[in-house]
Length: 204
Image 1 (tube, rainbow, N blue to C red):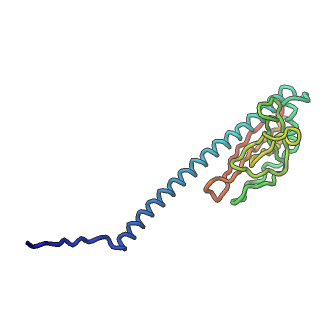
Image 2 (image 1 turned 90 degrees about the vertical axis):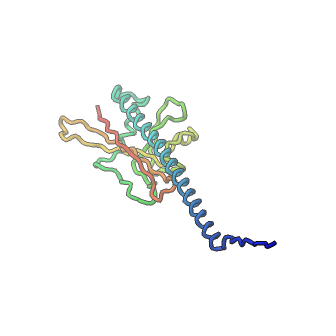
Image 3 (image 1 turned 45 degrees about the horizontal axis):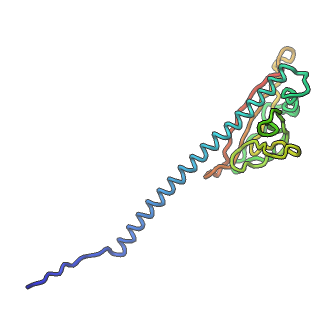
């Protein structure tokens, strides 16, 4: 009887290394796509939250202005805060620009935010400041503070007022452009994220 031996050839070390390299590249690429998708979702959520903060500031400013127009002589209530909004306004047609590509500005001359003095409170407060703490996660107004020492604070969000004189001083109406700005460091971006809007309100 004759026995035949079949010689079986196994994978060489080169073939194994090539297979491991290809698998590693696929795994790394998949992880990068997952991280990129997570960062995009995070940025989208932050933009939504900051836009809500900006819209809240705009609504509160309109509320203060409406109360002031209805009763300019009143010394209490939301309307009484209008003088704080306009009292330190810029007289030029512009405000300092966000021109730093690597960091959010912290020195904010003639800046303020509007908020209720505490969550659920009915009293509005206009807090004026010259510096804005950097946002921990996203730009917002923090009212969860000691109401006595500091009722509210801004994190990467501020408002600046610009007085727009009338084209005809004899018959024109003074307007105020209220620049609501936000700047914060987002996930996966070397440049800070910025958002803003302008609300124009008129003197009665």
